Length: 392
Image (cartoon, rainbow, N blue to C red; front, side, top):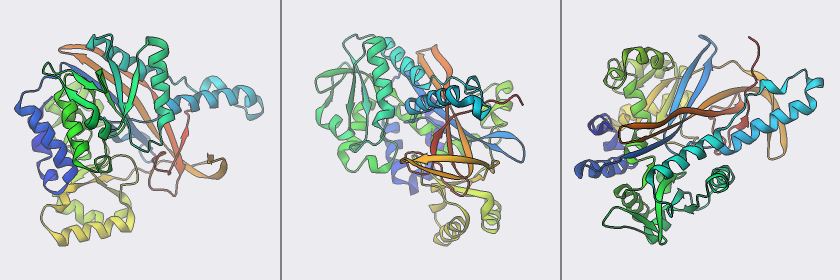
């Protein structure tokens, strides 16, 4: 809700990153008209790795747009619990040690509650999807729960379809294909290739201008950028937003984060690239830079000069303990040393000053071979997994 903070924190990034610049331009327009967002819905996933040196869960990132796999992640937990129940005796495992994972149901309930707060019974929830959507079956479980438990219709539209079929009425109502939209749930729109033409940007602006609940709104989207994550890790910045007793808890899970206006940290990263990750302002997996590529990129950006470095942040590389595992992809089983990343889902819903929902909503476990730098499932680097709780 602090528009000036977002604009100032991302001011250098916008000069060298066209995608962030376009998002900020929409945000600025909403600030100029003092656009009210009475109902705010956030469906998040905060991702962590267990640092072997400190035995601490350190945050990789906070996703505020298109937090994926609540549907399939819940199913995998059910699958593992069922398999252990059937074969647990011979494996010396107990199915109850795989914790229940209701991410799909809880995300659906948060969407239903946002629809209820909007308070128009004939309105629909609109899911924004990619034209060649590969993750539709993860999304399907949310739509199914909304229909079965609440009788709420979900429509699926691409950004270009919204531009072609949509309009905002004088009272702010968003109509798409003649249907009133209560909630816009983004499962696309987080990457530059989601906006191949001006039509998609026009659709994004149209939805922001409407009274529909956006999950996320443009400001909520910007909060999830890597640069904001790094800004919040600076001294005295969390104090702007949190109480002192909360700040210590949050800081404990921060990994090292630096902007690239710090010459000493750049020099250190060039000398020891294996200790760092170079991150652009991108979501969706497959974008980070490691090792010798990191060194070469930093040297090149320094030679280019200007503000090119502002498009990236540096992050401490986290080294989890590797364990032997079997990973199945495409029906083929791979055996090898693997590491895991834990995502904690959360839902936040408020209507004006009233906080309606603020709770964790299950988890996502992703496992990959330890030799792989990247960790996205949809991007092809990892598999879905489950937690198994031990007595330690």
